[in-house]
Length: 360
Image 1 (cartoon, rainbow, N blue to C red):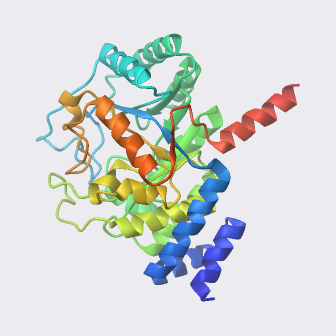
Image 2 (tube, rainbow, N blue to C red):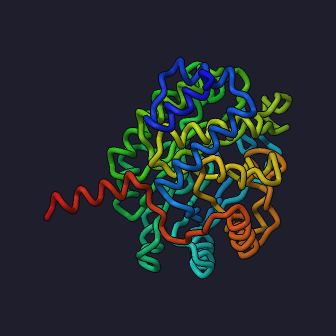
Image 3 (spheres, rainbow, N blue to C red):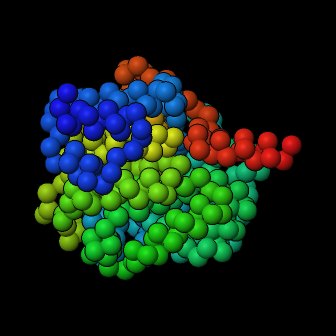
């Protein structure tokens, strides 16, 4: 057995690799090694979650953003974006439609748009929960005050997605001129402490990113132990400072998805739309490499094209019902089963079980 196969076996058996071992693996992995890695990741996913793939209804409710990230198509400096903002009433209408389609988790995602105040969010969350008490609500709205996160959790938010983007402080602050590396991490730590199911994650193929940076990403996630890990390729957008840079590859991204599954096995890992943009079967490939979540879009069709974080995004003209059933067929085509339930993480379920026993 080769040294790399020994490393992959170790990762599968122990859910652990040292930083230098991860770097060694990333530097030397071959096509054959990748297949071994994907098989181990798939076994790990099936041991933990079986064949279920959890569906979440994604509502992209505003493309207005105060931040100026160098890679993002909706960055504040991009004057060519046609901006939009859905009213709370329109967001509720999306939830109503999504509920009828069977979704029991809604992901409310936007740029960092401060028009949506704490008060607006509290009222919106309360209304969603009063209509549909059993649904899980995930927010992906960026950096806010800890007190705001606390109020939103109390109002009914269950989960919060906020990628750490990169574990390299130097790379982070180069790519995010309006943001601070330490603040990003402090937000994630605070969200965990408040009781949210937390999602973090990173991009693969960023300009200047090294194998050491990617190893640090996995080490940070192992330390943070998020409930969800979002990993996608860097896809350049022509209206950004990085528009002429080379993008990330599907192969490199799938390797990181599979390694995340092995090293943080209880996590939920989405097969991202960005992977489906890079390759027609990108999301199916991710499911076979350890991913177990998909987020069909239920954003109104008339604004979907404007939520362009990267170019050539798929599904922008589909109706919500088209996305719902297309995704289910794709899941079934590779031997898995769509699950429309809340789909909580194993870590969260374990914590709740422990708390219940402690209280009894």
